[in-house]
Image (cartoon, rainbow, N blue to C red):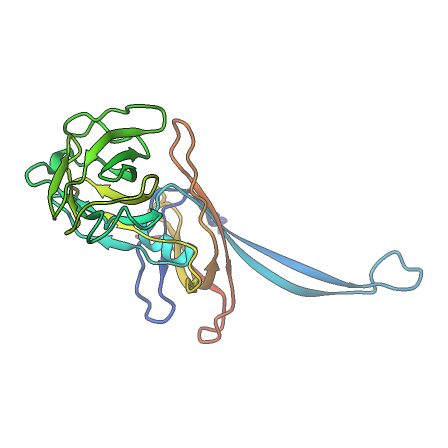
Amino acid sequence: MALSNPRTIFGVHSFTPYNVTTGEFYGTVKVLDSSSLALAGELISLTGGSSKYPWAIEDGLITAELSLAFSQYEDFLIEIMLGKAPTANAAEATGSVTTIANKFGTSTVSATVGIASIGVTAADEGDLKFGKYVVKVASATTVDVYLASDIDITRGTDGVYVNDLLLVESGITIADTSATVAMADYGLEFTSGSGTIAMTVGDTAVFSVRPPNTKSMDVIIGGTSDSFPEFGAILLAQKRGTSEMFEIDLFRAKAVGLPIGFTKNEWSTAEVTAEAFYDSTRDGVFSMRHVTPV
Protein backbone atom coordinates (compact mmCIF):
# COMPACT_ATOMS: atom_id res chain seq x y z
CA MET A 1 0.00 0.00 0.00
CA ALA A 2 1.06 3.61 -0.47
CA LEU A 3 2.42 5.65 2.41
CA SER A 4 -0.10 7.73 4.34
CA ASN A 5 -0.03 11.49 4.14
CA PRO A 6 2.17 12.86 6.94
CA ARG A 7 0.49 14.40 9.97
CA THR A 8 1.28 18.11 9.92
CA ILE A 9 0.39 21.20 11.94
CA PHE A 10 -0.34 24.57 10.37
CA GLY A 11 -0.86 27.91 12.09
CA VAL A 12 -2.48 28.68 15.43
CA HIS A 13 -6.15 29.11 16.24
CA SER A 14 -6.75 29.66 19.95
CA PHE A 15 -5.56 29.40 23.54
CA THR A 16 -8.30 28.64 26.06
CA PRO A 17 -7.35 28.44 29.75
CA TYR A 18 -9.64 26.70 32.22
CA ASN A 19 -10.09 26.28 35.96
CA VAL A 20 -8.28 23.09 37.03
CA THR A 21 -10.83 22.38 39.79
CA THR A 22 -14.15 22.97 38.02
CA GLY A 23 -13.09 22.64 34.37
CA GLU A 24 -14.83 25.93 33.57
CA PHE A 25 -13.24 28.07 30.87
CA TYR A 26 -11.83 31.47 31.77
CA GLY A 27 -12.28 32.65 28.19
CA THR A 28 -10.36 32.31 24.95
CA VAL A 29 -7.52 34.13 23.22
CA LYS A 30 -7.92 34.42 19.44
CA VAL A 31 -5.53 37.26 18.55
CA LEU A 32 -2.47 35.01 18.68
CA ASP A 33 0.87 35.43 16.97
CA SER A 34 2.17 32.09 18.20
CA SER A 35 1.66 29.32 20.71
CA SER A 36 4.19 26.57 21.23
CA LEU A 37 4.96 23.83 23.73
CA ALA A 38 8.68 23.12 24.10
CA LEU A 39 9.61 19.79 25.67
CA ALA A 40 13.24 19.81 26.74
CA GLY A 41 14.80 16.74 28.33
CA GLU A 42 18.00 16.43 30.34
CA LEU A 43 20.50 13.60 29.84
CA ILE A 44 22.50 12.49 32.90
CA SER A 45 25.90 11.06 31.91
CA LEU A 46 28.09 8.75 33.99
CA THR A 47 31.74 9.64 33.44
CA GLY A 48 34.98 8.60 35.07
CA GLY A 49 38.47 7.33 34.56
CA SER A 50 40.20 7.98 31.26
CA SER A 51 37.19 7.33 29.04
CA LYS A 52 36.32 10.23 26.79
CA TYR A 53 32.77 8.92 26.50
CA PRO A 54 30.12 8.35 29.15
CA TRP A 55 29.86 4.88 30.62
CA ALA A 56 26.11 5.21 30.74
CA ILE A 57 23.37 7.75 30.10
CA GLU A 58 20.02 8.02 31.80
CA ASP A 59 17.20 10.45 31.21
CA GLY A 60 16.70 13.32 33.68
CA LEU A 61 14.19 16.08 34.16
CA ILE A 62 11.87 17.05 31.29
CA THR A 63 10.45 20.56 31.23
CA ALA A 64 7.28 21.46 29.35
CA GLU A 65 7.44 25.16 28.59
CA LEU A 66 4.52 26.94 26.96
CA SER A 67 5.33 30.09 25.00
CA LEU A 68 2.55 32.45 23.97
CA ALA A 69 2.52 35.65 21.96
CA PHE A 70 -0.83 37.43 21.76
CA SER A 71 -2.31 40.85 21.20
CA GLN A 72 -5.35 40.98 23.47
CA TYR A 73 -5.56 41.78 27.17
CA GLU A 74 -8.64 40.17 28.68
CA ASP A 75 -9.59 40.26 32.36
CA PHE A 76 -8.94 36.53 32.76
CA LEU A 77 -5.38 36.89 31.43
CA ILE A 78 -4.72 39.57 34.03
CA GLU A 79 -6.13 37.25 36.69
CA ILE A 80 -4.07 34.16 35.86
CA MET A 81 -0.86 35.93 34.85
CA LEU A 82 -0.77 38.97 37.15
CA GLY A 83 -2.52 37.45 40.14
CA LYS A 84 -5.54 39.70 40.49
CA ALA A 85 -9.01 39.54 38.93
CA PRO A 86 -10.05 42.98 37.61
CA THR A 87 -13.34 44.57 38.57
CA ALA A 88 -15.59 44.56 35.51
CA ASN A 89 -17.90 47.56 35.69
CA ALA A 90 -21.36 47.78 34.18
CA ALA A 91 -22.11 50.40 31.53
CA GLU A 92 -22.16 53.96 32.87
CA ALA A 93 -24.52 56.06 30.76
CA THR A 94 -23.61 59.21 32.67
CA GLY A 95 -19.95 58.41 33.29
CA SER A 96 -18.37 58.30 36.73
CA VAL A 97 -16.02 60.12 39.06
CA THR A 98 -14.00 58.41 41.78
CA THR A 99 -14.13 59.72 45.32
CA ILE A 100 -11.76 62.65 45.69
CA ALA A 101 -9.03 61.92 48.23
CA ASN A 102 -6.30 63.96 49.87
CA LYS A 103 -2.84 63.29 48.44
CA PHE A 104 -0.65 65.89 50.17
CA GLY A 105 -1.85 67.53 53.35
CA THR A 106 -5.31 67.10 54.84
CA SER A 107 -7.23 70.28 54.06
CA THR A 108 -8.20 69.92 50.39
CA VAL A 109 -10.83 67.28 51.08
CA SER A 110 -12.74 68.10 54.25
CA ALA A 111 -16.36 67.82 55.30
CA THR A 112 -16.11 71.25 56.91
CA VAL A 113 -13.25 73.48 55.66
CA GLY A 114 -12.48 72.11 52.18
CA ILE A 115 -14.02 70.17 49.30
CA ALA A 116 -16.59 67.74 50.65
CA SER A 117 -17.11 65.86 47.37
CA ILE A 118 -16.94 65.98 43.60
CA GLY A 119 -19.57 64.78 41.16
CA VAL A 120 -20.90 64.97 37.62
CA THR A 121 -22.73 68.13 36.59
CA ALA A 122 -26.31 67.21 35.68
CA ALA A 123 -26.93 67.14 31.90
CA ASP A 124 -23.22 67.85 31.29
CA GLU A 125 -21.99 64.24 31.19
CA GLY A 126 -20.87 64.60 27.58
CA ASP A 127 -18.06 66.90 28.73
CA LEU A 128 -16.49 64.33 31.09
CA LYS A 129 -12.92 63.69 30.00
CA PHE A 130 -11.10 60.44 30.81
CA GLY A 131 -8.06 60.79 33.01
CA LYS A 132 -6.51 61.39 36.40
CA TYR A 133 -6.87 64.85 37.93
CA VAL A 134 -4.96 66.70 40.65
CA VAL A 135 -6.57 69.50 42.67
CA LYS A 136 -4.09 71.92 44.28
CA VAL A 137 -5.01 74.58 46.81
CA ALA A 138 -4.05 78.01 45.46
CA SER A 139 -5.47 80.08 48.33
CA ALA A 140 -7.59 79.43 51.40
CA THR A 141 -10.72 79.41 49.23
CA THR A 142 -9.55 78.60 45.67
CA VAL A 143 -8.08 75.59 43.86
CA ASP A 144 -6.35 74.84 40.58
CA VAL A 145 -6.99 71.62 38.63
CA TYR A 146 -4.49 69.62 36.57
CA LEU A 147 -5.13 66.78 34.07
CA ALA A 148 -2.59 64.00 33.46
CA SER A 149 -3.08 63.68 29.69
CA ASP A 150 -4.78 65.36 26.74
CA ILE A 151 -5.85 61.99 25.25
CA ASP A 152 -9.54 62.81 25.80
CA ILE A 153 -9.42 66.57 26.27
CA THR A 154 -11.55 67.34 23.20
CA ARG A 155 -14.50 65.18 24.28
CA GLY A 156 -17.66 67.33 24.35
CA THR A 157 -16.63 70.93 24.83
CA ASP A 158 -12.91 71.22 24.13
CA GLY A 159 -10.65 71.60 27.14
CA VAL A 160 -7.29 73.30 26.89
CA TYR A 161 -4.04 73.31 28.85
CA VAL A 162 -3.15 76.63 30.43
CA ASN A 163 0.55 75.86 30.89
CA ASP A 164 3.16 73.11 30.61
CA LEU A 165 2.42 71.91 34.16
CA LEU A 166 -0.85 70.46 32.73
CA LEU A 167 -3.06 73.06 34.40
CA VAL A 168 -6.56 73.07 32.91
CA GLU A 169 -8.55 75.26 35.35
CA SER A 170 -7.28 77.89 37.78
CA GLY A 171 -8.85 79.90 40.57
CA ILE A 172 -11.98 77.79 41.15
CA THR A 173 -13.67 79.28 44.22
CA ILE A 174 -14.83 76.86 46.89
CA ALA A 175 -17.58 78.84 48.65
CA ASP A 176 -18.73 78.43 52.25
CA THR A 177 -21.49 76.17 53.61
CA SER A 178 -22.08 73.29 51.18
CA ALA A 179 -22.12 75.36 47.99
CA THR A 180 -21.52 73.81 44.57
CA VAL A 181 -19.38 75.17 41.77
CA ALA A 182 -19.03 73.73 38.26
CA MET A 183 -15.73 73.10 36.51
CA ALA A 184 -16.51 74.58 33.13
CA ASP A 185 -16.16 72.33 30.08
CA TYR A 186 -15.28 69.23 32.12
CA GLY A 187 -18.68 68.05 33.34
CA LEU A 188 -17.61 68.25 37.00
CA GLU A 189 -18.86 70.07 40.07
CA PHE A 190 -17.31 70.57 43.49
CA THR A 191 -19.39 70.63 46.67
CA SER A 192 -17.81 72.55 49.54
CA GLY A 193 -17.70 71.62 53.21
CA SER A 194 -20.37 72.68 55.69
CA GLY A 195 -18.31 75.35 57.43
CA THR A 196 -16.10 78.30 56.59
CA ILE A 197 -13.65 77.25 53.89
CA ALA A 198 -10.05 77.47 55.04
CA MET A 199 -7.75 75.21 53.01
CA THR A 200 -3.95 75.17 53.27
CA VAL A 201 -2.07 76.51 50.26
CA GLY A 202 -0.10 73.74 48.52
CA ASP A 203 -2.25 70.84 49.71
CA THR A 204 -3.42 68.49 46.96
CA ALA A 205 -6.08 65.87 46.27
CA VAL A 206 -6.67 63.43 43.40
CA PHE A 207 -9.58 61.82 41.56
CA SER A 208 -10.22 60.03 38.26
CA VAL A 209 -12.94 60.34 35.62
CA ARG A 210 -14.58 57.97 33.16
CA PRO A 211 -16.80 59.41 30.41
CA PRO A 212 -20.12 57.72 29.53
CA ASN A 213 -19.24 54.19 28.49
CA THR A 214 -20.50 50.73 27.61
CA LYS A 215 -18.01 48.92 29.84
CA SER A 216 -14.86 49.47 31.85
CA MET A 217 -12.51 47.69 34.21
CA ASP A 218 -10.06 48.60 36.91
CA VAL A 219 -7.56 46.66 38.99
CA ILE A 220 -4.63 47.24 41.33
CA ILE A 221 -1.74 44.84 40.69
CA GLY A 222 0.98 43.91 43.16
CA GLY A 223 -0.95 43.55 46.40
CA THR A 224 0.47 41.39 49.17
CA SER A 225 -2.50 39.02 48.96
CA ASP A 226 -2.42 38.57 45.17
CA SER A 227 -2.04 34.95 44.03
CA PHE A 228 -1.36 33.25 40.71
CA PRO A 229 -3.76 30.36 40.10
CA GLU A 230 -2.87 27.15 38.33
CA PHE A 231 -4.79 26.69 35.11
CA GLY A 232 -5.35 24.12 32.42
CA ALA A 233 -5.38 25.13 28.77
CA ILE A 234 -6.60 23.97 25.38
CA LEU A 235 -4.31 24.86 22.46
CA LEU A 236 -5.63 24.49 18.93
CA ALA A 237 -3.77 24.73 15.66
CA GLN A 238 -5.45 26.37 12.68
CA LYS A 239 -8.03 24.19 10.96
CA ARG A 240 -6.48 23.00 7.73
CA GLY A 241 -8.04 23.02 4.29
CA THR A 242 -8.43 19.27 4.70
CA SER A 243 -10.54 19.99 7.84
CA GLU A 244 -7.85 18.35 9.99
CA MET A 245 -7.67 19.67 13.55
CA PHE A 246 -4.93 19.29 16.16
CA GLU A 247 -5.41 19.92 19.88
CA ILE A 248 -3.19 19.95 22.96
CA ASP A 249 -4.76 19.88 26.43
CA LEU A 250 -2.40 21.04 29.19
CA PHE A 251 -3.62 19.57 32.47
CA ARG A 252 -1.85 21.97 34.84
CA ALA A 253 0.19 25.09 34.10
CA LYS A 254 1.35 28.25 35.80
CA ALA A 255 2.41 31.65 34.46
CA VAL A 256 3.72 34.63 36.37
CA GLY A 257 3.92 37.95 34.56
CA LEU A 258 2.21 39.70 31.65
CA PRO A 259 4.26 42.29 29.77
CA ILE A 260 2.21 45.21 28.46
CA GLY A 261 4.03 47.15 25.77
CA PHE A 262 3.31 50.46 24.07
CA THR A 263 5.13 50.99 20.76
CA LYS A 264 4.61 53.78 18.24
CA ASN A 265 2.09 52.79 15.54
CA GLU A 266 2.10 49.12 16.53
CA TRP A 267 -0.37 46.77 18.16
CA SER A 268 0.77 45.75 21.62
CA THR A 269 1.90 42.11 21.78
CA ALA A 270 2.58 40.23 25.00
CA GLU A 271 5.08 37.39 25.06
CA VAL A 272 4.45 35.06 27.98
CA THR A 273 6.08 31.86 29.20
CA ALA A 274 4.21 29.31 31.30
CA GLU A 275 5.28 25.92 32.56
CA ALA A 276 3.16 22.78 32.46
CA PHE A 277 3.51 20.10 35.13
CA TYR A 278 2.26 16.73 36.26
CA ASP A 279 -1.38 16.09 37.19
CA SER A 280 -1.69 13.00 39.40
CA THR A 281 -5.44 12.69 38.82
CA ARG A 282 -5.02 12.36 35.05
CA ASP A 283 -1.56 10.78 35.36
CA GLY A 284 0.09 13.03 32.83
CA VAL A 285 1.11 16.53 31.85
CA PHE A 286 -0.84 16.99 28.63
CA SER A 287 -2.78 15.13 25.98
CA MET A 288 -2.85 15.48 22.19
CA ARG A 289 -5.70 14.84 19.77
CA HIS A 290 -5.82 14.91 16.00
CA VAL A 291 -8.79 14.32 13.78
CA THR A 292 -9.38 14.16 10.02
CA PRO A 293 -13.14 14.53 9.55
CA VAL A 294 -14.89 12.79 6.67
